[in-house]
Length: 328
Ligand code: UT7
Image (tube, rainbow, N blue to C red; front, side):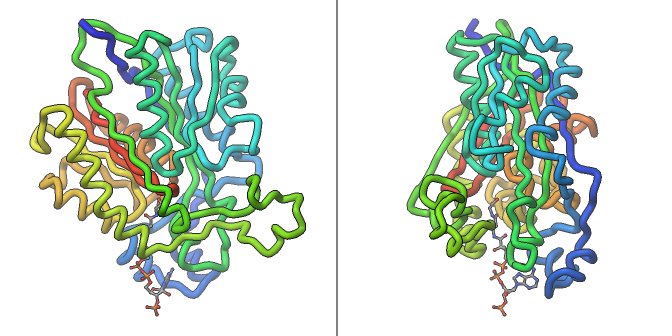
């Protein structure tokens, strides 16, 4: 039988500080009613200055390793899906590798914004199925609130911080593991979500960068229209590749950006409420952490058990989108 990439441990970590919609009403011209009706978000977690992306990631990784009973020395590779690394370099994966004591492991980041975990897990799956590694730590983590303009009501109400990690192992003689992956991108949409300053185009050291945006920009309505189609398309494609249909799905864990986008994907796939995992009301959009936090909470709540078929799907800046179909 072929080698499968099986998730055997999962854990997540979010900052303690809660920012409610009422708190935001004191900061910008908004209302709890607008935020709940348009997004479904009621509160989000905000990291402290010390809580960097690697700090949250290491906390989550240790929980995942404990569940999988994985020693640091067993981890051969650390892959972190993030766009808010501690620094442009070194990679956040290297900081996680050091933080968990995985001496000898390789480490690299994957930059796919809110689809970061989808992309990172699919790379891990291919490495394992190809025989290049036996145990990989995959992390999805972001601290977007550190890059938010707290005077811009159209973006500051949306984001939260967090991290989640999984331990993926090579297993034989099982039908558990990553079933199918779909990864897609459309760079023409790069202009719809960006953070201009800090890269080689607008280096912080260049005085001309002072006139560029150093906080998140998003054309919300354009991204919304894209997301509604992208979520359903990626899921349908993954199911088609697997020779399955949506009735085979036991649990749907979509990127938690906006409740209305999740509802439209749910309707397109014809899924009942009990098969859809939603926590956007408590965390907002945590970017690369959003899907694995959902998986981690679903496991903790007993909604996701070994053998179940789970569909994950995400989209974000790039534009990128993709889906992973997993036999848990
Ligand atoms: O993971 C990354 C991917 N990003 C996303 O998934 C975001 C996708 N987009 C969205 O979720 C939605 O577009 C938003 C939630 C961002 C916005 O919802 P919308 O229904 O598309 O609203 P809108 O941008 O069309 O704005 C409608 C109105 C505007 O006022 P006018 O021009 O109609 O008078 C905005 O100025 O709502 C206003 N508005 C607000 N009002 C109160 C925008 N933000 C706020 C706010 N509170 N926080």
